[in-house]
Structures are given as structure tokens and as C-alpha cells.
Length: 519
Image (tube, rainbow, N blue to C red):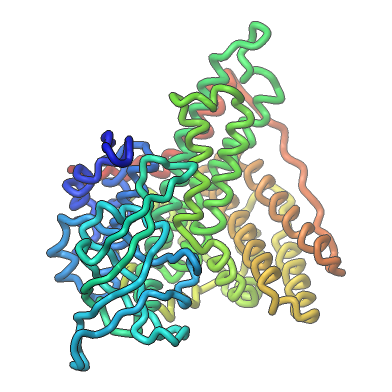
């Protein structure tokens, strides 16, 4: 999947990528099967993030054409390589401040042919792509939500490429470049932001998939290494402190795996956006933290080029950057605070477990890219505390106390007018993500009936409490602190390696029933 280029050195083989990527497109048009496309990508491009992200960038750009309602164009260009032309150096991802300008070539009201002029920055695939989906303005002085449009621009309209060297994923080719040439309007003029939001609904799951995959390579590799390495004539995995650290990593990774596949199971519902936003922000940041901790536990082995442990820890940090906007996504979640905390509907445990098991066991086609945005913005939340009680965990987990504490915090932030402040809106959104992660950990235990996953519940509870108490401390608030819970004793039966791999493989089973289509 890589070659030595005389200009750039070792890079992704973009010709091979161009010839193979149709298989990903075929999974998305006409039947939109999001997870199947990811699985096909995994089968095609292996375990290297540079190749997977290059393919993902092309797929997202191509999906923008579908989101604009231009299915015929998307079908006709399935043999092409694409890139996303969004960001500019002076504005980063603040798209409403974009300086790239599009001028119609005729005065016809339905004109779709434009001349584009501007410069894009930090764009993956751009030097090798056949087409670019470009964010530009038809009214340069405007910065409102209707100021943006999306254009399909051929490579011939782009020039003056300058490669931007990066510390990670060096085999990708990221550049800045000028646009000065013709382009074709996608969808309706002034509807660019709406098109991007429609495309972003399902795309939130894609970088999260790569993050979970990196995790699923790194942690088992650490278990294997520490079960073979010798220190003081003993395998480090047998040391109680090392076993405990690996055990904690395995349980946290189990929750992240489950959160991803849980979100996928409910992606056909109005939770598409809520769970997708959590994946795109909270989960990617947690995966970064976990792989960093994993590297520290392993030690020097992780620094070797042959090891995925260090490579994945480093490469994972690029995912929130390329996936973009994790702060904006968390601010979006904060808007749900009152409805999330005050929902009264009683959720059906058996019904949700059935959806989880069916959704986790099979990949389904759907149409999330054309889902009704109003419904997605208003997920049907349910009584959080009642649902935790109905799950019947053998733990003294008080969902009512959690909800009451969050309501008190939200009330105090509003009374002090702090909810108008982006810092505190971000913190509230993050806390809601931690609450949802705790709920997912409870469902993980219920779905698997694995007693060790009860400690995963406790760990998620304590992580939420630490974040909650930190918000109170940092802002000198009057809301009462929440107490931590004690973990249950660790019962390692048999060899530590087998014990940890059994717990971890229990989470990998969430993905295994989905087989990639033949390619």
C-alpha cells in the first residue's frame, strides 16, 4: 500500500488507492451501509493509519456529493480519488470565515458552473486527488450560515502545492495549495453548511472506528509482550502492579469498544447525532489517553518500529485533529443538558438489549446521510436513574444521586450565568458524555453478564465523579462533591495472560460477527 516517491519519499500508494476505493463507495451507494464500508476499508488497507485515513478522507469527500443530493455524479465518479477542501491556514476549521470565493460564470439563476479562487491548507490527498470538494463563498462579505456552498473542483483547477511535514503519519501527503479555476456547484447555493452537517452525521463514526481499531491492536500486543518479557527471572505480567494496570486498561478499552458498537447499533434511530458526537469527541480523546497509558506500562518495547504499541499511541493523537471540531461537538451536546437530565420516559431494558445484540451482531444498510435533521437534533431521551435501577446491577450505584447532582450543577451554572461561557458549556457537554459512558458500561455488563465488567462500571463512575468534582473545584462552585466507589476485588483465575485476553476478546467479539463484503 506504500511506495517510494522521488519527490516525497515513502508515501501511500495513491494509484493503488484510486483503483481499489470503488469497493468502499459501492457499500455506500445506492445502499448506505456505513459499517460494511469501514470493514471493507479494513480488509483493503490493513492496519496502517496513514492508508486508512487517506482512504477515509476520499470517502468523506465523496460522501459530500451524496449529501448534496447529487447521486448521479457520485455514481459516475466511483473510480476517482477525492479530498476535503475545508480548512484554511488563517481560520483553521472556522468555516464561516472561509476566504475562498466562488463566482458564477453566467447570470442564470440555476447556474452550477463557477470560478473558484482561494487557498486551502492542511489537506490530505490533495496533491494526488482527481477531485476536491471545496467549501467556498459566493458572497465573500457574508459570514452567516447561508454564506457557504460546496463545489466539486477538478485537480486541473489547483496549483502551487506545498507539502506540510508532520510529526505523525508521515506517509500521508498533506499540503496547502491554490485554487484558481472552474468548479461545479453541489446541491443548492448557500446550503453548504447544511450539506456538511448531513454528511457529518454518519461520518462521525469513521475516525472513531480507526481509534478503536488502533486500541484493539495495541493492548493485546502489550499483554503478549509482558507475558514473555523477563525481569528478575519472572514475566512482568505476573507482578501484581503490572497485572492491575493491564486489568484497568482492558476494562476501559472494553467500554470504549462497546460504546462504539452500541452507537452503531442505535445509528438507525434519532440517537445517530448524539452518539456520533460523543464518538467524535469524547471517545477519540479517551482512546488517546488509554494508548498513552498502555505505552507507559509496556516501556521500551513500545519505541521500536516493529511494535504497534508506540506507533498507535502516537498516531492516535492525530485522529481528533483530522476528525475535527471535538470542542464544537461537545458544545453541541451541552444543548441537550436539560432534556437529558429531565427525561421521564421509562426505557425498556429488554427492548434495548435486543437492539444492542441484533445491532452488534449484524451490519445493516440504512440512510443516515439523508436522515431528517430535526429528529436527529431531538433524541428521545429516557429516565437515566430509573433505567440504571431497572438494569439490576449488583452494585450500590445511585443513578438518582448522579442526576440530582448534575441538575444542581446545571442550575448553579445557569444562576451564575456561566452557561453562556464556552468553557462551562464545554464542561457540561463533557460531563454528559461521561454520564453516557457510565450508562454504556452498565449495559456492557448486562449484555455480557461478565462479572469483571462490574469494575468497568465502577471505573466509569469514578472517572465521571472526578470530572464532576474538578468542575466544582475549578470554578469554586457551591454544588456538593460526589463520592467515589470502591472497586470489587480482582479475581484472576489461572494465568494472567489468559485471564486478560479473555476479558479483552470479549469486547472484540462485538466486531467479529460482521464480515466484510468480498472485494
